[in-house]
Length: 248
Image (cartoon, rainbow, N blue to C red; front, side, top):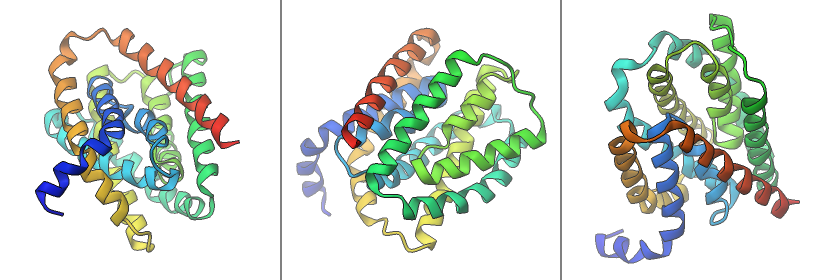
């Protein structure tokens, strides 16, 4: 693909690029939300299984950039424990990914997000940060990464209501998502899943990702966290209910 062809294809990708921009902006501020926001929105434009693979590319790229900015705040012991759990969860999730049809995955993605939001809103408690709990969270995150494209819900539920300080939580989430998405892409490639179509679409969505990350880091010190959180919740509820309605 030459540069002229690439530029001529950008206008046709304006819709999905705007979705990625919004999701990347929100993740730059909160530390999570790229896949949770972008995946259901991109399903308006792409087939569900293709969307999941595109999100692996976007998340790995976006998180690698953000990790360079926050790596000093990462809780590396927790990353190692989560990684051990993910090594178990990713192969289990891959089996489900290869068997479940596209509409089924769309429903799974939406139901998972709705369940996560409901639990986060109503079950406000602090989880005990232990090695066992962290490894189990990694297993669940690995399964969900492969089946829905999002490792975030178990991680957010575990750390957001723990005693981990907000800057450390944000940096640790970004770091884990980076390694998790690389492992997920490697698992798909090693099992023969074709990645070319997703990689081609990913290239067109890169400008939205880059601009969202840059703007988010620029305004992060000035943004009210409660406002951003409420925007994410309202948007996700609306998109998830729409996706379930369209799929059934």
